[in-house]
Amino acid sequence: MNIGQKIRKIRTLKGYKQDFVAEKMGVSQKQYSLYESDDANLEWKTIERIADALEIDATKLIGFDETQIFNNCNQSGTIISSTLHSIDKEVVDELRNQLKKR
Image 1 (cartoon, one colour):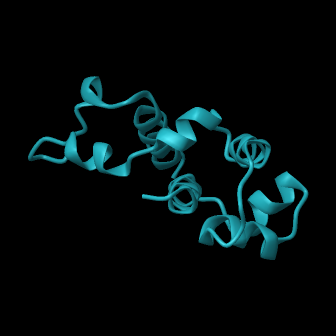
Image 2 (cartoon, rainbow, N blue to C red):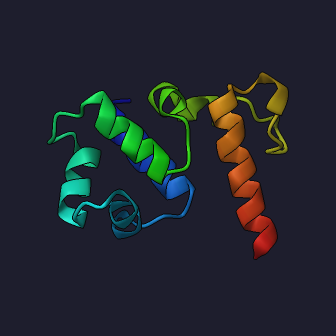
């Protein structure tokens, strides 16, 4: 999974729209979409700004692996959180919190 795909996946898991994240970063939605499509060369400073807008640590953004979330479920669909990486735990916790609010 490339960095653009990781950014997109975390954004969608958090329920954010591109224009929301772009506004938090102070860039246009069009510019932000380039980050997700890997049409822009991302410098570390930009990755940090994206991570801040997504409310996640930049190193965790880089290391995000969605397969770990799904590979650590038991047959009933319950996530075995003790085997998840910390970024995956944060995403799962965020999803749980969103579901509780509904």
